[in-house]
Length: 246
Length: 121
Image (tube, rainbow over all chains, first blue to last red; front, side):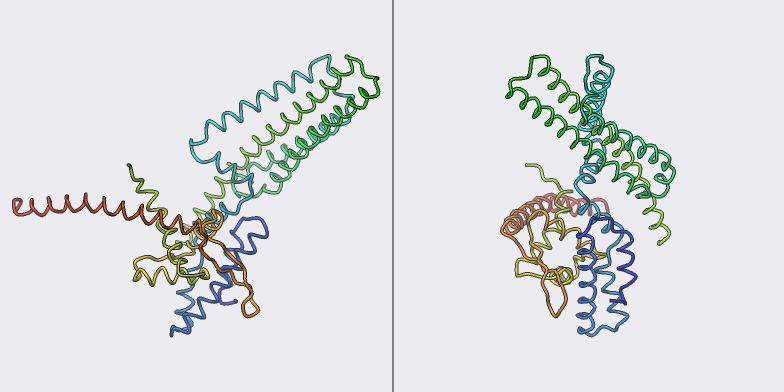
């Protein structure tokens, strides 16, 4: 295995894929290199020739590694790649931007509306907390813009945490709305809910969903913009490495 | 019917891998060696280009990868699935048709060029 250590180390450094796929790819590569080396040696090649031939055939080029990264990327990255593919999916991207603006507008309308009783819902305070965390992470990401521009995946962990917060926001929004409806059903069954309370509870549930949707869509757009920037920087960095190697 | 020559070119390596697995399951490096040997060195899957092809075919369900323990080591072996066999059959027909049409165009153009040559001289 040590005779191909440099090949495996290079693949290990450049292969960006989630576990366990990443380890499996590296294990497969290691086994193939070793087995091919053994077979070439048995076929009469010298050790140096067998190493050279095995590397020429199986050691992945930067393009092959890039293709493997794309194949084994998590779902959200594959979706982002889909939007990044030239103008083919521009309409879908515009649709996402439109939906985000619409939901942000709705959220602002709810927030500014004097009739809103959203603040009485505990889920609204949780959403406000998530919004604060998102703002903090977003500001940190903005401060990292030079790093993102020059070092490709420097901000990957921060970008991932932003996605987690968006997921949390959607979970809080949906569960908060469900709790409102559940409480309302309980009151109605006990015969203690009047029309005003029903409207207020349904309104709070709808407001929570609108807020959560606005948070999630806006976060996805910010993440996507940062991802595209980071991807371009990574491609630029790969190009420089290739030129240096050449 | 229009033939997408770019798509044919891209799928050529996939078809070579599928064709190799038709005669039985293989490890990755065995596939690369066999493609080279069976084509008399005309086709080579060098620089690890084999791995993205194998993993894509596996994801599409055209081949099945299985980890097996051999001699105390974990090794991955690939085999052709039914869907892979169908894909190979369809792909082979597509390539054959493309080649026939391409040769018809080239032969006609080549004959014209041969006929025109003495007149130029």
